[in-house]
Image (cartoon, rainbow, N blue to C red; front, side, top):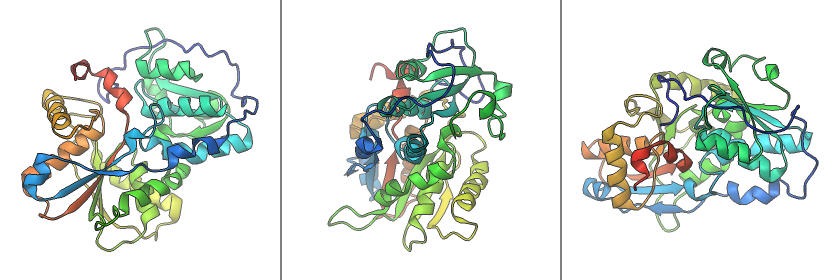
Length: 341
């Protein structure tokens, strides 16, 4: 199963990228403009979900999972500005993540299409087979270097990236001011009404690094009648509040106006990337009822939290809810129980 906070990451071997530096590739005909379609939010779909019908609420889903087979979900927008800067400065990009990182997976694909060299610092060991996620990244030209868990815990230190190479640095999960700013188009799509319908009153999104939540709040500003809820998918989710506040302060100042917002805690299902039997069963039932595929790390836990609130009458009848599907379906490959669906 995918890397978790508590269990050791299965070891991996060094990627086969032949590159001694992170100097940018020669210019290619393709530019960032050729990926603009990835940064155009997809249409919003109303879910045919019996549980929502019984609760008397309307659940709409922004299907960011449909953007692209490799650069999907919120990752596309978090990468938008760092990719543009790397192209402008003719530099490569260096970032970090775990063995099943959606972020590294998307970054490698974007780099391959734009002619940008990418270097991924992976928490793990070099001697065992790559996860399918890392194999994809390697096949898209990403240079893979493996670091110990002890060293990886230093990833927020200023000199962490410089120890391993040169290039535009993107923190884990795209958690930086550029990542926050790049989410503006996605934020607007989450709040805009479907033609002929009222605007949503409640916006829900899953949280890992907190960057997407910060980006949505920053872009939307103060809005009457709208509440934005983040659902932490890892243990110690209460600490996410402080991280989001810090990202907001760094990107727009401590006095920045935002919609009303909060966190729904308790949806981590044992911890990051953990998928107990009840969550797998929820996924199977949800997909059978709605026809929407989800993965256990983020979006399934988001919908499971919503299901809990609906089943217990915690959301007023008539509420219009907009849910962000964050993509990451490539990570389903780490869960054998989902391979038969």
